[in-house]
Length: 255
Image 1 (cartoon, rainbow, N blue to C red):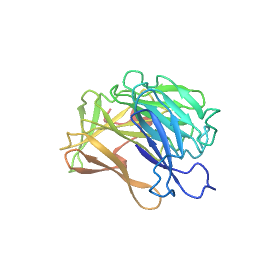
Image 2 (image 1 turned 120 degrees about the horizontal axis):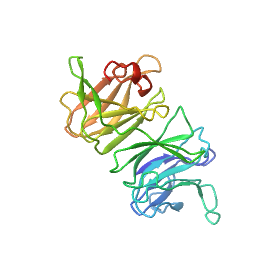
Image 3 (image 1 turned 90 degrees about the vertical axis):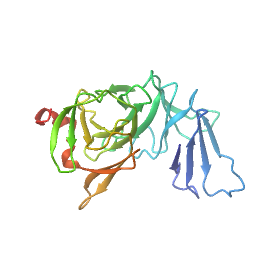
C-alpha cells in the first residue's frame, strides 16, 4: 500500500509512504535518485501485515504530519509522527483490538469530523468509527436487513438483504456519511451519529464485488452521483438523491 505524503512543507521534495506485509512503514524521498532506493525513515508498526494506511490528516487532533496504520492481524490502529527522533519513539497513538477478530483491512478519515477515523475489518463484516481523542471505538450496524434497489429504469423496491460480506472500499461523503462497498455488489451507508442504523443499496444486474468507489462531480462544488466499479467489468452510477443518510432512515418509506 502506497500513499503520497509530505511531513513538512519546507522539505525540498514530497515523500512516498509504503506499508508492508511485515508490518513496517517505509518513507521514501521522491526526489532521491533512483540509484538509491533506500527508505529515509523506517517504522516498525505492527506484528503482522499493515493493510491500512492514511496520511495528510488536515485538522486532525493527532497532527497534520501523522501517519495512521491498521494491522491486518493484530487489529490495532496506530499513528506515528515521522518527525520525532527514532530513539524517542515515533508512535503517538495506539488503540488495540479495533477489529480483534478480522484485523483492519481499510481506514479513512471523516472529513467533517477530523477526530474520527473509519475502519473496516478483513473478515468481521463491520464498519467502526474510532475517536482518536478518547480512543473510543463505535461499532456501526452490520450491513444486513433491508436493501434499496435502484434499477436502470429508475424504479425502487424494497427487498430483503443478504448476510454481510467482505468490504472492499470506503468513501467518506460530504454530508458526514460513510459509504462502504461489499463483496456481493451492495453498498452500505453509515453515519457516526446513527450507529444503530445502516442504509443498504444495490443495482440490478450487479452481483459481484464492488471494489472501487468515487464521486462524480455535479454543478458547483456538490457531487451528483456515486460511481462504483465491479469485478464483473460493470461500472455503475447511483444518484446521490437515491442514497439517503442513515440519519434520515426513520422517515424513509423503504425501511
